[in-house]
Length: 56
Image 1 (cartoon, helix red, strand yellow):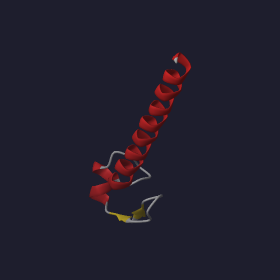
Image 2 (tube, rainbow, N blue to C red):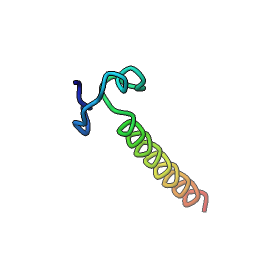
Image 3 (cartoon, rainbow, N blue to C red):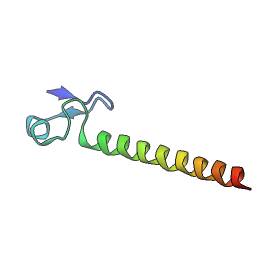
Image 4 (spheres, rainbow, N blue to C red):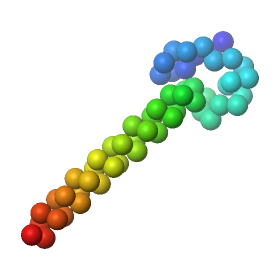
């Protein structure tokens, strides 16, 4: 049985076949996606804040 590279959870053959990625389980993929989205939102907020300060 293969394991997830991030959480080390065992992955069944069926789960491996239906999974979106070969290395990570779907739960970890969704967590990674959320982390990436949060970073983008934070960086966009900082950019908008900096732009507003420059205009003032």
